[in-house]
Each structure stands twice: as C-alpha cells, then as structure tokens.
Image 1 (cartoon, one colour):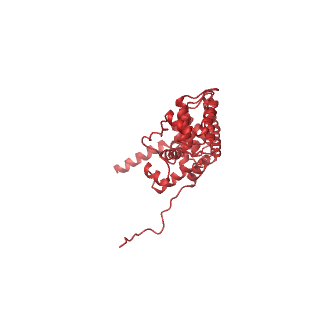
Image 2 (tube, helix red, strand yellow):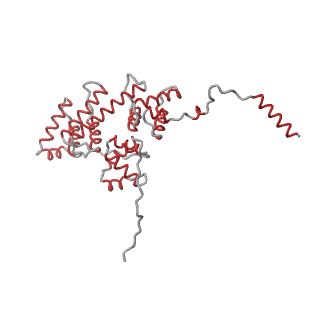
Image 3 (cartoon, helix red, strand yellow):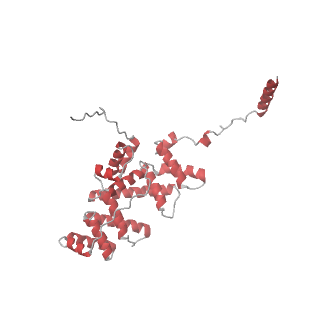
Length: 311
C-alpha cells in the first residue's frame, strides 16, 4: 500500500528585504543572487557539496558568489576558506598535441607577447594555455583580460611595468567564476571596475588620504562600503564622527559606524541626517540653560526626613 503523505497547503514564504534586493541588483552578480535565494530557502547556511549539486555551480563559482555576498554584508564567512583551484600541469608534449591543429592559440600567444613586449617563458606559456584550454575563455576575452592586468599594474607601479602571469591567472579565475566569457560581458565588467575605481578615489579624498596608494586592508574596507550602498558623501559623515571620537581615521571604528547605519537602512547623507540617533553619551547630556539641582533644598529635605523617623 502506498504511504500517505501530508503536506502543508501553502509553502513558507522566502522573504527578502527591499534594501537587500537593491544591493543584489546593483551588484549584477547572478550567481551571488541565486546563492542568496538558496541560503534563504535553506535557513541561512549551506555546504559546498549540496549547493554545488543543487545550483549546478562549481566550488570555485560558489566561493566567488559567497565572497560577493560577504562584500555586500549579506553573508558571514567563518573558518578557513578552501584553497583556490589551480590550472592543470601541462607538459610540452600535451600542448603540442592540442595546438597542432589549432592556429588560434598561436595567434593568441603572439598577441599576448606583443602586449608584454617580450617572449613568454615556457612556464608562462603553460599558464596562458591553461587559461585558454582549462578555463575555456575565448581569445578575445583573454586579450582584454591581459590588457586590463597590464593597465592596472602600470597604474600601481609605473609605466612599462608588467604583471606576472600568476596574477593574470588569478584574474582569469575571477572572470571565469563570474562567467565573463564574451566581449560584451568583459566590457561591462571593466566599466564596473572603472566606476569602482572612480568612487574609491572620491572616498579617498573625503577621508583625507592623499599622495599614497591604499593598502589592501584599506581598499577592502572601502569596497565593502561601496558594495553596501554608501557614497563618498555619506562616508565623509562617518569619517567626521570617527575623528571627533578617536582623534584620527580609525578604520575599524568607522566601519562600525557604517555598518550601524546599514543595519538601520541609512545610506545617503539625507537618510543619515534624518534617521540617525545620537550616541547614548550625548543623549544624556544636560540641555543648555538647565540649572543645577538645589543642593540646599535636598539637605533640608534629608534633615526633615530624619526628624520624622525620630518622632
């Protein structure tokens, strides 16, 4: 006999706040949005194996999506993260066998060497081939990726400086995990990075940082705040409050202010001015013009109470 199954008539609703939805939409990361819905449905936690089977994502894609959610303040990552994936080790014979009938990789190699201004070493060629073969990024996307890495390195270290192929490999993984596999997607991603750099420069100015580059920790704070939806104007208010309280730019203290505003749904200078409450120590401050307690009256009352007790 078939087992009778009883199920509730209506499924429990999975609710997402408007603020969280706006952050996911502004990020434009489909994998992160899908993982967030899965997290809500699963009660707030997941394992790599289960999520990979359910969502059809690789471990690398899930890690990148989880990192994106963490940057938006929607996920807390605890413990030691899994090591990143590595490209397969290709032998010279394997590369020869797999490229003998494909002039595409030879053309790609020539273009990349022209961008680097030198001949690539054997190890560098194997890394480039792994990006082309294992990550399966199209040659035109790889050229945009390499150009971006060169531009970023020159901006940081000076004209003529070139990135290592290992750093190109790491960036290639980031692009593959974001499914940046077309020229259109690559162009959109680079526009996003350009906008991020522009906003970061505005925030640097608002925080009084001049004449130097940001450290990796400082950049992480700023990118997190941008991902949460804060502009330079709003962060300048947090900076002013931090300096008034601590006497200097203290990143951890400023981050606590920013995340407090985020928890209250306050992200613009106007929202902060209208909705932020005074700190407890200021909330209890005596209003201007208030008189001190009448100490003499208090003492007379105490003497009266003592006489009443004796009577």
